[in-house]
Image (cartoon, rainbow, N blue to C red; front, side):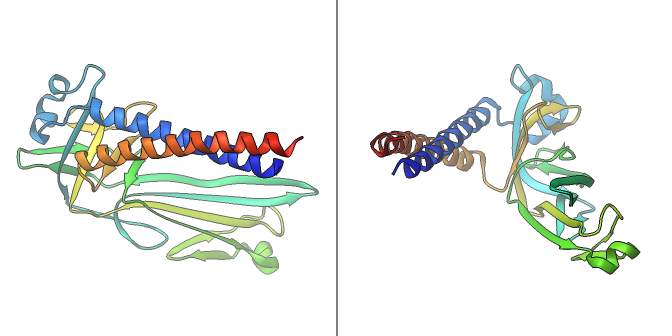
Length: 239
């Protein structure tokens, strides 16, 4: 019972933390003025909040979409991360071989003129698709450095150590007809706001606010309840 109580406490902490995250997100959304895309492009500093926060929503305008390297998905943004892992004696070793983020040049337009979106640093995207796959080069591959295929992506294996495994993770924002963007105003565009993430969503601002508000209440209430129940179980179960 004591162990079960600790597990429930841990779950409660996760719930509270996620509730706080949703609460912070709701605060960001409500604190970023929703403006016309033409105004965001032409006079972003004047219509944004005092700290530069701004948001827009409208149709996606893009002349050249990207094609993701692993799944071959037409998209607005993708990231690709490749990690090699191996053992040296009893020690686990790993090395990042590639970590890149690529964004198409695209804009959002509500009919008043386009505002460019800089998604090159990634962010909080919805919808977001992710695929991760691990493979070993095998004995022959480890010696010859033969390529490993991860979908459409070919990885030249490195002679780090026999038995090395390679994990490739692709994350992308697929093409959608409309987007809501929340970030920081920059010259003729919107970018990620410093240490926080750029928010891009196929949902409207009102839908996101409602979802974040419900999530904050639900996870906070559930998390607090789980903390109390877990603490009681741990106490009754003894040390």
